[in-house]
View 1 (spheres, one colour):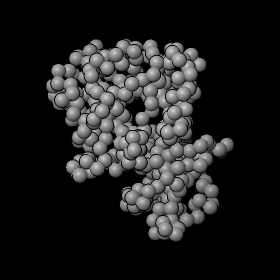
View 2 (cartoon, helix red, strand yellow):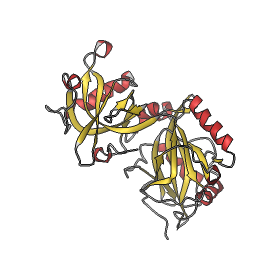
View 3 (spheres, helix red, strand yellow):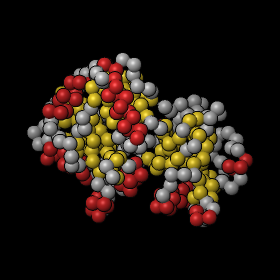
Length: 325
């Protein structure tokens, strides 16, 4: 099989730590945006989860050409911005939506490409090779552990106590959690598979911004909270709840700028929204997708204690469903 390109990334299911720890490897879950990159004689090109070209958005990726001058490789990884040594999705927001970031911003908010898989090498697809083989080949490329590109280590699951300690460490450090990957797992582009499992310290999901409630006090005249939705199995837009925490002042200003042109006179939802929510709502066309953390779902499917994490541009509204893990 020839070198695959383009490649839609494989995704994981949500779950708990596996019982059969010996058969799994464990990686930190990076709080960024997914990107598949190809580096070879023709230069470097990177695609986001939705297939959009993000090469110019993250010029740091150009360093792959210098790191892999003699190879033609397809890499899977996460673009991450760090704050105080921890991944910061909030900080990454300053870079996510700019097609050509100014040099000043690239210096202020540098990103790293955290590579965790190798999908093709020198004309050969690695899709059917087990995780352990792909990781060994990736380590052999010697991309390093610092700078704009890094390949972090993974933990072999032979010691279950070490795995538990690692998960506890991520919780104490406020990190998102772990990714458990079966040692014998192949790579299946575009599929959500059960041999990759995300073990999260808190729940997150995408949601469609369907309106806002006006702010009060310090937020008066702007956005106070966002009204969120997702599509059900019949294609109707249903209400997930509203979120009023997790915003920065800069983020609220940007949301107001983006939402104002999308205003519409009536609710976009295909179901009734609670009267106290609808009373002062400003509805918008459901075109923007954001990321939200929450503690649980209520019995009627609403988000409990949600906190806003930021807008995403790597997912289309029609892909955001209630059944999303």
